[in-house]
Length: 372
Image (cartoon, rainbow, N blue to C red; front, top):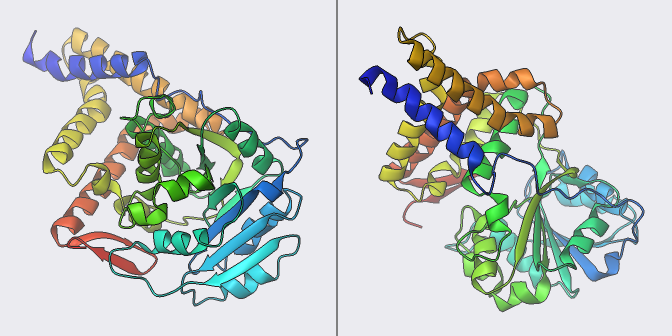
């Protein structure tokens, strides 16, 4: 094979293999939608919400819970908010709400996990719903989660539909979910194999007894990617987990421009690569080859190179279209995938550079050092 054909052939081969993988990470096969006609059964569930400066979204989140019916039990742990989050939460009717003032953050804990640990100590119901403060549940979502739990798994999580209103949100947020599913394939995670685990931390329903059996959140106190770490602990203990997507779990958090999206991704990107320079280099090589190789090859003089590049480009577009369709986005956004991939790669390098400077992660005005 001529050297000029190698990049085009390699990209075409990788995209073809991606489409043919048995677990199909690019498909939307794991879906759970609301059951609006099902009984609420909210007396079996305590909703546990960690909240730090969430005044903009907390009332909408709690109103979504009130719409589930049955006056759900909710424990909101106010993690040192300075914007009146707790006061705004207390104004929402239709809930059995307890607001717990969080204690100072101990050494070695992430803020979210410490808040959840304090709230877990107050839970008395068979099931605990771990809900981020910016997640709105459509009516019937609580019932659907409970129905799914009763058919086998002890841990059910749902990837929230992210806000896609501004240009940067439309460009990057569908791809955030797409890339997450490539890293943590839902079909593999939902199997009995304990080596594969995945979770979407914004909305997780778990059996309270299992959570306590594992040692609560103390068992993962310093985890940055806490959702997948918790799912891995559950599977290693011999239990089943299930992760999927839903239109009924909606993130209210907005990202008006590029910077907050960049910060969100850079917070965990290098952690997902296990802080490995080898994996970072491999990831960089593969993303450049997969997303820019087919584009560059279209201009090649060799007709075979152009044909292989067209095949690779078609594979790239076909793999992304199901994500755009699920979130009702214009399919033409798929044409921007090389640019999107480049931005995510740059965010990953930002995460790595920060780590090498001694910063493991930063979020909500907290910086977690590499040493910690």
